[in-house]
Image (cartoon, rainbow, N blue to C red; front, side):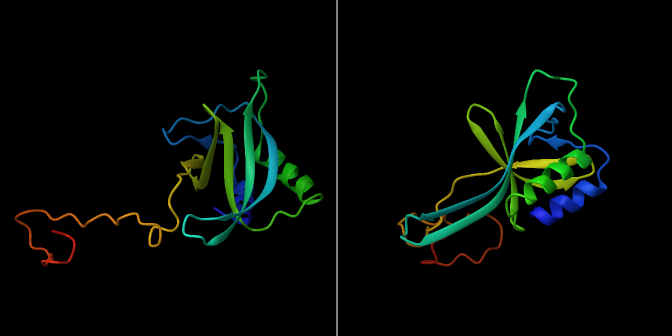
Amino acid sequence: MNYFEFKESLQRLEKLAFIMPNGISFPSHFHITEVGHTQKQFIDCGGVVRNLSEISLQLWLADDTKHRLTPQKLMRILEETESKIILPDENVVVELQGQTIEKYTISLSDFGFLLHPTQTACLAEDSCGIPLEKRRVVIGQKNDCKPGSGCC
């Protein structure tokens, strides 16, 4: 979800909830401790220079279990942030504390924002020598596998 979609979604929500990949809501007494525009420039293992830009929200839990953040309050936090730094329409990621800092992408559901785990991956599979997975063939089913095609 990009930043403008996120803000649009906040305006329609009555309650602010972030739902973990296991279906359990992140505790409702969370704080937003950071709103940022993160930029990363790097070289992948194939030698290609890449740029990544995203909007990050950091969720944090304190002992104040009566604390509740509303969609309207988060919108005010975003507006205050926008008065000080530029927040472009980039993908929104959520960071929170697990065994280390965990990073999630988000989407909207009827119950709140769903958190989707991010994964590392090789971005240059075609040039760094990682073999592509062979297509699996089910014996007894018609398939297009021909000798020399790499699927047999």
